[in-house]
Amino acid sequence: MAGLAVVAAAGLIVDDRVLVGAPIWFKPFKFALSFAAYGLTLAWMLSRHAPPSRTGRWAAHTVVVAGTVEMAIITGQTIRGRRSHFNIETPLDQGLFTTMGLTIAVLWVATLVIAVLLFRAHLGDRAATWAIRLGLLLALAGLLLGGLMVLPTPEQQAAGALRTLVGAHSVGVPDGGPAMPLTGWNTTGGDLRIPHFVGMHALQGLPLFLYAIEALSGRCARLRDERIRLRLVLVAAGWTAALLALVTWQALRGQALIHPDAATLGALAAVTAATAAGTFAALRRPGSGTGPGTPPAATTAGTAQPHHPGQELPA
Image (cartoon, rainbow, N blue to C red; front, side):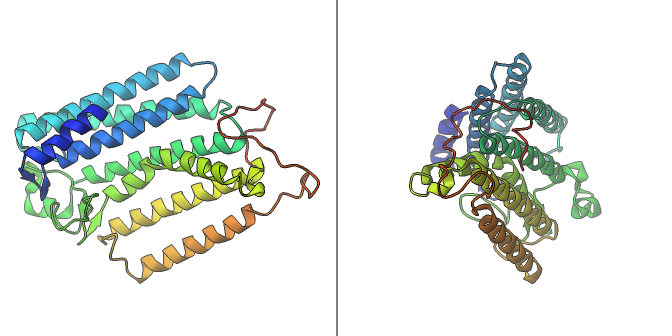
């Protein structure tokens, strides 16, 4: 996928074709980067499962095959100058789009298998364990939300466009309109790619958040306490889940991310206030067994601790 991203980046430079309002190689470039991050993160997570699991290895191989098939179709359609997603104009286009749907379903099931394996394993201290587990759950939710895009839109049903297209990533406006730079998200209507993105990349976000906490623990002694790190991970996961729900609700109402209405801003303010309160509560030093004279725990996400019954469950 990293190699394909380089090829797609070259395509952005030398190929000036435009498809659905965007440079034709932009989609392969974005998808290649996303799959590279997805595969790298799953590989890192599985490396923490000791001993290595045969089931996990086969699930990982399934993710690789599904992702490769998906990208082969996207790249092939790009070369042909055709849409890969939602395109059912010809029997070939319809067959390729159906195959893409099946490969993503297989990828989701394989990711679910990996999640089940890691929920049953001890992956380090409790903060690291739950950062990985909750990141996987949010990624699975984000993948599922992508299914909203393949449903026929009311406009397609009214205009009889189901003969050529089925589904869209925009809500309330046609695909290919004015878009945000870099992401390509719609600026005049809702965009279902946003919740898909937020959910999927929680897979990287929560572990990276934990590593940021641990990097700061050298300056803030309180962050060396495993229980405080666990609480902060749970707050971050709650914030991500709330944000996922909020951007999904916003997109389904046909509202652009950069043009929120009063209801969206009110919900965002409530989420922000709840997160701030949760962070304040999480940073309070645990009263049990921790006092001024008790040194805080110094475990890190990179060091596995001896397993005790019930240790993996958050308080």
